[in-house]
Amino acid sequence: MDSVEKRPFGFWMATALVVGGMIGSGIFLMPVGLAPLGWTAVAAWGISIAGAVSLAFTMSRLAQAMPQASGVVAVTGAALGELVGVLVGWSYWVSVWSANAGISIAATSYLGSFVPWIRATPLNGAMTAIFTGFACARSMRHGIAVEVASVAAPSAPCLMIVRLVVMTSSLWFAASLSAHYIPR
Image: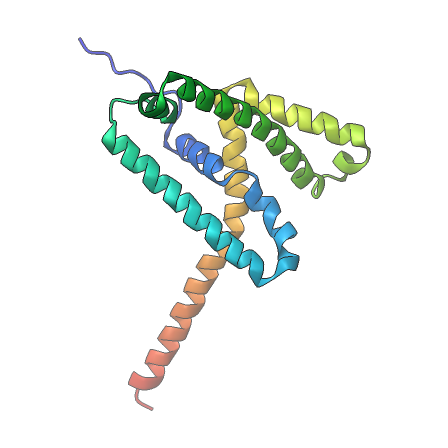
């Protein structure tokens, strides 16, 4: 009899993992730093988006060309040699650990706006950053739970704005229809 393997997490946790990995903490902190630059910042975002789309296209073409490869490290190793593949894997591993420290600091900075105790002393901020880093690194399930919260929290106001725009435009559309088609 075949046994079905239970998946470690469901659809929403997997979605939050992918969205959190793609967005990162920069989406929350960069607008503050780029706002004084005006339209130059908008052009920079456009260039960054073009670069990200180019990378995504390149990765999809590599996956089509080498479907047996397990990832970027395997593709690089197959195309450029084992040493280059190992160097790419090692560089990626170091960058992920460095990014985790940056994400912990960004989360602490973001939380400090809502919980003044965090910014009361440097020790409080450091302890919160360490706790946040360990909470995310403890296990995949706990880290994803933090990502679900960090993706859902900023998304809620955006969804409310979209809902308000749709409601307002539908009311305006209904009012304009009634002005033309209802006899007076």
